[in-house]
Length: 74
Image 1 (cartoon, one colour):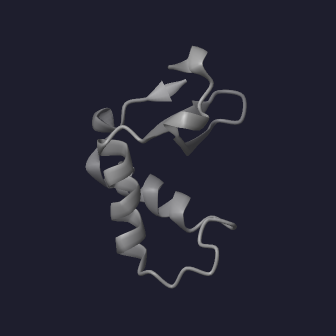
Image 2: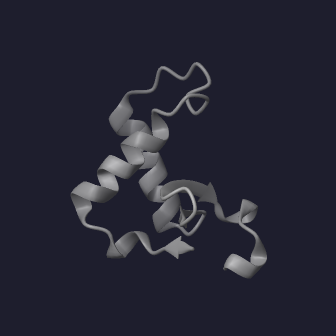
């Protein structure tokens, strides 16, 4: 299920983005400051390059590139 980012409270969205950019395997040795990585993710959402996906079975949200989302979810 896709969750429109603009329907999420600002603080909740920020927490979600911080969680995503600090997950294992997302930094790839990148020393970019946390806030910069959060803003990059936010801009990807705003440009429509990324989407927030909620998985009901696991009760977890994740950020995915729109190009990687199954077409029937869009």
